[in-house]
Image 1 (tube, rainbow, N blue to C red):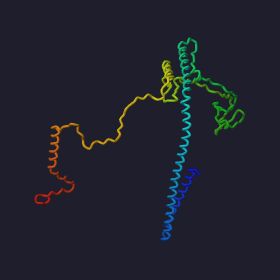
Image 2: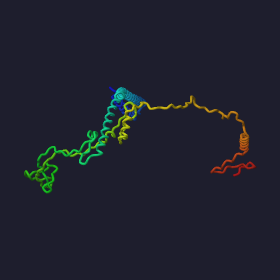
Image 3: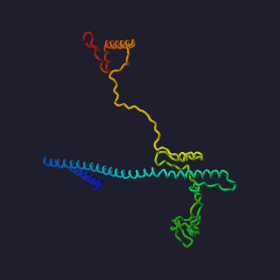
Length: 326
């Protein structure tokens, strides 16, 4: 029994425990006749609650088992795929460069042939056809004309007035070999000769995007792009791209040395502000200190402001005779 099957069993037990507790609680009124009966009912209720709690714990454990089983299966699949990926990565690095050389050799030949084809087509004499390049010969599909596959003579029921074919030939009620009727209103119909032609329809020409522009070639051992067809629009540019693709590029980008400073411990500012070395008090410092002291003395001599009256009754104030005045 796997983890999923054990989970289903635990959920069935949990549903049964919930039903039993519901039944026990619903029957409480039947056991109120005596103290012994009610004590017996409470024991049944406590046992049902304990069983429900146990079943819930089992379900939680089964969920953990399923998660652990799924995680183990994922790790196994990951390990297997990692071995496949490592093997392919090694092949990309070892076999990729030779494959790129072969493709780039084709690209160079195709570019040279297309350049010469364009040069020839630039001066086509009157009455002569243009020359197709290797790309068009290999990848373009010319227009296909209609092609007859089969022809058979047949007779079909048609409406007598219009000559149109009746869609459901089996619905016709024949009066003779050539006449009949169809539908609720007994619409007259007759037999008409046709030629059944089975054919392939014509197909328009299909022109492919130029090979040198459609091609994308990444390097197999680095992130760089060997060939990007978006830039392959002019013969001169194509030649530059071929030269750049043939050059050997470093796998790692060039990096310049840089410097940074890392604090070895968290910064704690000094408890008192520090003055510059050799600092002497000036007259401005003394005047500032004197003004600050005078202000503090003035604030100490000021009487406290009376409390603001409340919005309700006025606050009573004692007079000189000791009585309160409103």
